[in-house]
Length: 404
Image (cartoon, rainbow, N blue to C red):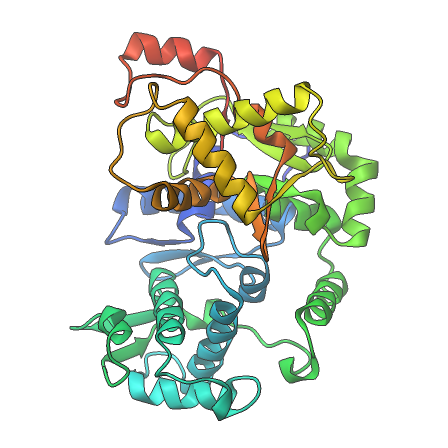
């Protein structure tokens, strides 16, 4: 089944597409209604994900799985992904390697995994120490991520207590979904001395497999909502420049009520209404209000002639300057924001995570990069901390689109 570029999708199909991007795993026993809806449209959905994203959907016994390339997630994680730092991604790869060696449905104890990671870890067993609290915390993030992805199962105990004691142990099992998440690369990862070379090799592998530039770009947009153009490969960047208008028209013809806005530094997906299974802006809470205030502040400063934009159209600030900006915005808008017991630092970390989920912010080393699309969220703050009444909400929704 081939999906025509100009064939508008029914609203139900669109909702299921976004649900699969959000859920990735759908079990009949956990979400029977969603599972039934997906199965009733499985042929159409398989065609959409094949033609638009080059992703297969596996319909198993009692579950549905959207199969994404795990190495892409490791290198370019979804903003909602719980992995944060370089060591997280290294440990993630080590645990995947151990799981692949162990096999599906096999059980093991945490102590066995820790010894295996030392053997896999770059630089040899002395390069990592489980007595380091930060290393243990990193592995906890990795284990929780794999559990969330349904690749690992826990028995009786949780991984959290490993943070307080390196001698903590528990029983873990590799799930039967591993076959749909791990695939062999054509060359050993040990041949690559840095992440840049690995990215290039995986990119070339995708080209050899027949994955199109456009499909790779759609993957990023639908997964993240906001695409930083600097993250594109050279051929993808050339393609986006030449065919951006056609892609914009194609999206709006096929996905009704979904629009592609193109800025100097970023592309942004917006929707005419909230869709199920997605984190949206705006919501009626402190985080959303502060993002509005920050966007408005940055827009006003630029209108006043502030020379913040670099040659790619980003607003780039060092971590301290970004935090100072947040504090000043919080103070200036305190009458419109709900009172919070959180310190400036704690609240800023939460707001920053929220902005990363929306794709409006990324952090590279000590530099905070704000998308020029942040002006999209500028405007008045809705003063109520609870969702407004339906008539007010309807009036608000008619004047705004929703970011994902």
